[in-house]
Amino acid sequence: MHVAPSEFWNMTYQQFETAISCHNEFHSGNKNNKPLSRNEMEDLMTRFPD
Image 1 (cartoon, rainbow, N blue to C red):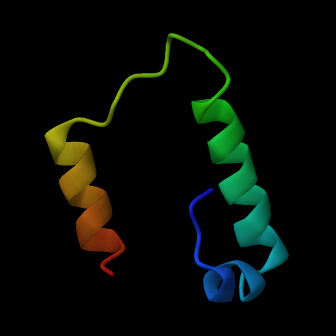
Image 2 (image 1 turned 135 degrees about the vertical axis):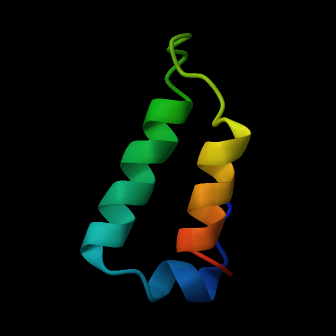
């Protein structure tokens, strides 16, 4: 998942479940998944800044 150990151990169960679900979906080989559009990515970056 490429998560720092401190971030991993501070995750709530819900955050962990979501991260695993997204990771598995991304790596499932499902060819229907497409990258986010620029607008979708900008929206996520605005909503969840680092």
